[in-house]
Amino acid sequence: MRLIIAAAVGTIVVFLWSVLSWTVLDFWSDQIQPLPAEHAAAVTDAASKVPASGAYEFPGRPDADRSVEPAERDAAKRTWHDAIRSGPAGVLLVHPGGFEPAGSSRLFRNFFLEFAGAILLAVMLGIASRAGAGYAGRLGVGAAAIAFAVVAGVLVPGNLMVHPSGWTRALAGDMILGWGLALFVMAAIVRVPRRSGRYARS
Image (spheres, rainbow, N blue to C red):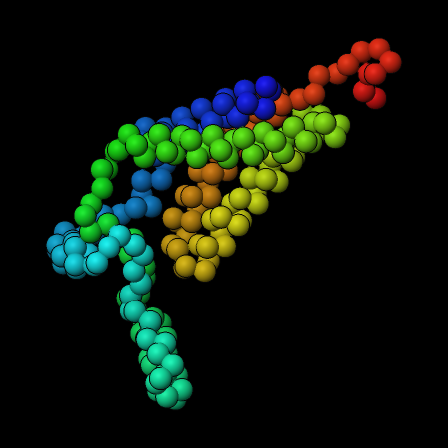
């Protein structure tokens, strides 16, 4: 029961932090800049013509058709690499049909995803507690879990996909602050009560 309570409280903390940091406090708003007005129409027109929602890279990589001569494929790949180096280059996340900017379904989905994450964190804290870790030890385990999530889920893909450094810092900072706040509360809730008498924990 302690795990469920800890996960529920942790989820509320993380969810409220997300709302505050992205809307009220406006911590990360400067990491998503609007396109200059003189170019926005052209980009919107191009994005409306993609076949479906997805991630689209530009310049597009050459076709890996095996029927083409290897020398021709290599030449096409070199041309593509040169085009990426000289720019512009990037990845567009496109929804040609649009989406609801503040949809309640997305917020509910996010809440339940955060609850799933909080359950996993609570389980790790519970295991640490049963292994004899005190509050400081549980904080250490939780901090390691958050650090792993930031490295594996933000820094690694950010490096591979060449995300702008400011955007990567915003995602990492939001995760560290939000889940860090939740961790302080969850680590206090998830603990194995000390037993008295002959079965007392040493």
